[in-house]
Length: 120
Image (cartoon, rainbow, N blue to C red; front, side, top):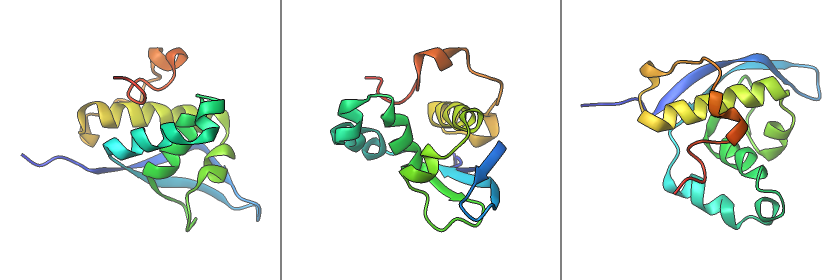
């Protein structure tokens, strides 16, 4: 049985780059164990555990509009509603690995942070 390893998304607001270009459409791949484990060693995460979400998203987002490089600065520059949307998408996509089953209703677990990331 095959499953989806990447899903497409459209951000509610979009990322506004320094040239004023709005990037809304993107793609995200399934996370690997390394995507969740390696950022835990990053000093930014040790100083501020909430930064884990920024690093992990920068690793699993494979495209956003015409941007060539998705890095932590791009994720830091997202509007809060877009960051929340991507966190929900990440949690749902990685929970069962089936992009077709994703329900993008707001997550009640949002107050707890990433439900998949960091759980043992």
